[in-house]
Length: 431
Image 1: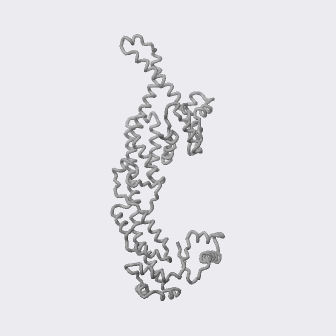
Image 2: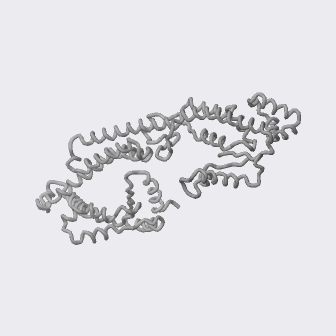
């Protein structure tokens, strides 16, 4: 079975949430289930279902025909309201009733003229001059509708592109603000019959929309270059992922005492750096977002340039390896580990002694070295202190606090974490 009308409409609702103009029209033949579909959507979303014919008729009951025409936009706004994110207007015929009636009458009139297909038949023309002249307003309205239709067809592609681009770029981006200003200006011009019929309007509108599109492409390319690694940096990332320093840290991470969260954070940062090597300006002429990586700066935060982050991660590796080396040396030289060191077998003792003497990790962190270090440090107990948990503990009781109060909270938290441990063998690891 195919999708129901309500399911199709719900799918469009999700897409419309990213757009500036969020009007969805359900067009179908009479009796095809439009009202039933709207009732289903209302029950599933909680959105109000509005009988527009009934509501507007009630509001316009005491107004003259001229007053109705002048006040309809305001009354429609009041009826729909702005409190609900989704409103489901049904029975909207009242909005088009007068124009449709006039056009239907003119249509019938024009169809009746088909009978006069020869000069002889025109002798029996039954319509008066007044009846013919009465069709002028409808024919004029039809010309306006066709003009608007042609304008929409001509501008629709670029306008749709820009609408998508608005959802792709960050809401606060300079281009988005400029686009909104231009849009309001153009809508005002296109909505005014006098301005709409002015010579050169289409060319002006097309130029402004075209300029906006090119500005958007340049802005997107700048953000894309900041958020994605290029070909050269992609190779740097691949080399860093296989770097000898990272392999050493991964081996050391199997030692219980090591602050492995720091290594995981590094790996997450490296893994989150995305590469895109193929985007061109021509790609963005056809689509407002990258067809290769689907980059959307509206939903993907763009911070420091990806290539700079990659360079900083290279430095982070040096820092981590240096800090972990100092941590091992400090604990291997601690009096509490001396006995464990003496219990090592000669070959294992030789590996550890060489490390302590040189104060540098061996080039090959083989299984024997890692196992020996684990043996020596096996008597120590790792106490993990999470920074967010520590902050909560320090703020318990209120802030600001006196120095003695803060010190007391800190000590109580550490005592709780290290309960039952020999203080000389506990090692705090902040993560």
